[in-house]
Length: 294
Image (cartoon, rainbow, N blue to C red):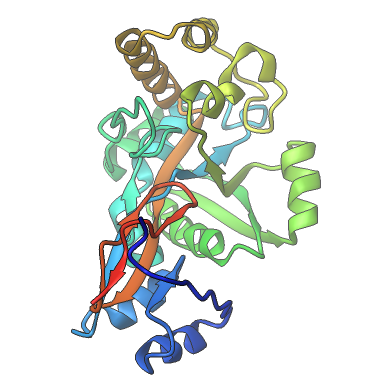
């Protein structure tokens, strides 16, 4: 039985107005808040912050039909040049978790793959030299202008990659243009975007399967071993067998640097101290079944 008699939902889109409402006692709880709002309230003893990785992975997607990204060594250099920890601190203000594959930390059968390509700018430079780019190269990073989080990520990535000689020209486009040119036509070099997960990894990783070789970040790359693993994973129900399958699948996706996997941004909730029993899910669900007001 619920512990509160009624719930009143108020829709406040402006972050400053959200802060003002909570501080004034007009609301008891803020949900889906930005890292900036959470940071502003972290030190206030009247409130507390809950956060948890979303079932969403932010990626640096790579067009593997375009040189130099056709070369695995160049993609490996990209992966080694990215400092996820710095990215999370500067963009998510600490409210993010590093990821190394296309599954978020809270997803079923998630396996940590951040160890495959640790931050190592010297190794990145060596790989570029080996691939024939001792002076680096220039590429275009197309960003959806309506997603400030991705734009900020792109700016930090540009600074990080410049340290190893990869010069990014940032191109901001509106969302319809991104959907048409990047997602629909695969007309891009690199892009930053978020991919939401599903309850089953068979659905989350379907874009890497044999049926989706035309997907925007799949063009120019395929791996028959991975495709067979994903086919088996979608058919088998035994949990331990699926765990083994999806661990190897994540490793293959990461090793081939199909994309560079950046972070799982956190869901953030801020509440007044008088609110007890809150539970935070990785999914876009607000569970208040155990919440109470003291």
